[in-house]
Length: 218
Image (tube, rainbow, N blue to C red; front, side, top):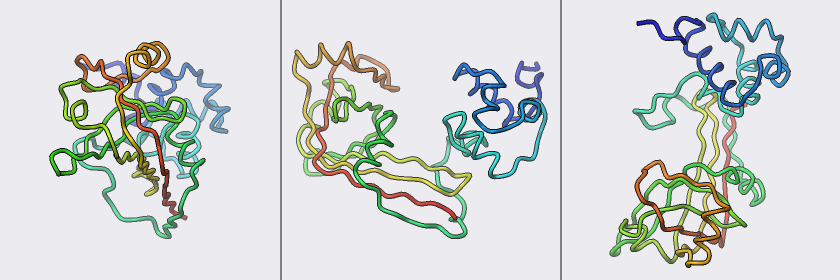
């Protein structure tokens, strides 16, 4: 059976552009203005296979608040970062404010903590609230039982298409929210664990040190 996306044409790139534009509530003309493109050219991108330059892809990805890799389609069944490095990669350290700006929208991060003398790392959906990292878990999980105290928290983003990315590392202290904080967080913080289930326990990480690095391909 032919799906609506197949009937509209444009291939995988066109389908991703249409879906992302729809999710952002943008008209084609609004997206074209954001990406500094002609609306007619953008229509061809959405409905017919088009060879795009790297610069056009970057502008389109930025206008859609996504990455070139996401538009081209990463493979979720394998770890990110396959392929060769960029031709002239440049690795730079990031300041604390740049790191905070990158993680402020929230997303998925990796929490490292100790359980019975061994380090454990688990991914969690998180948000940032008043400078603290906040996520939800169940009281019966390893995080709920052993996750308080010194922890490390890492967030990264990899753009496979451009061979670029960044990583932010936070060292700090994790604690469980008390009853009053839980009530307040429940009405002010939007963090939805992908794992589902009853994740009634809020955990806050107060950063003590924030560092980060970024790699760019020139």
